[in-house]
Image (tube, rainbow, N blue to C red; front, top):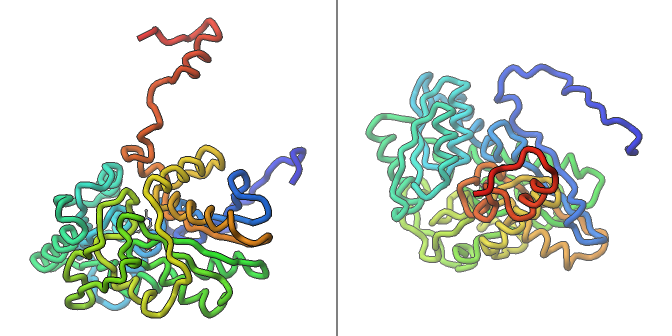
Length: 361
Ligand code: PMP
């Protein structure tokens, strides 16, 4: 396309019956300004999902798989422990399908998340941050048992990796058909994304290296310490290598059963630690230099993708997953150094013309 040609659009060629039909089919987008010379760097922008994260996929499939299996009855309350995006996705799905939803969440996660879930009609029950992920998880189990609710179990259910196998991975296969794909970079929360990708890429693109990333100060997999499990593969104890980290949505304080499949089957080729501050810095650069607004986990995967890109052979093609939107982090360290008031440069611009100036403070 040349600058002389106006951009045109055609619509999607269909009418959507429900917001739920807009989940998935997110675009893979080239990085132009930040990528080193000689390699092609892409991101898969999961914030194009209707509730703006990768977890819309899993939320929809957990509910529809349970409907198909008959384990979720019409009008039954759904309950889940979630660091936010699964709750937001479930709230969207439950609003559309008419199920009441109760979410348990540690009070350390961003305020935007709570308010978004409540906006979408869910009830949010906060748990003490000192009790970490296990606390919110156990609260959800207690509530489900006491009230006879449907527990979504994102950390154990097969509906999680299955939907990434059926959608996320297929989209990548189709979008890179006939092209190189040397590396895919992702972190993990439940491990659903990487498990789904590994199932498909290992078979259909065995040359593609799957690089898994985890927070430097919560390197559970790198520690080599096995997760203690109870009934149905649920975690029985907090993992000893866990420390609180700023990469919301990544690495809970246990190794989820959904991720265990990847560890047991050799579903990844490399494991790289990333510091939260690095992830934040790269999310800020993606916004300011590429116009791509993603959260801290997206910035963290991108940080690793940049490390790989800088050392990769000429012609290499690298894809990083961007799980959600940066707008979900206005109250967090991602925006901490983004000011609300005018800085000196903006004030000087204001004063460079006579009209409409703000009164000096
Ligand atoms: N980033 C964010 C912001 C998330 O909310 C999640 C899901 N918890 C992930 C990454 C990880 O995705 P998955 O659960 O598929 O491993």
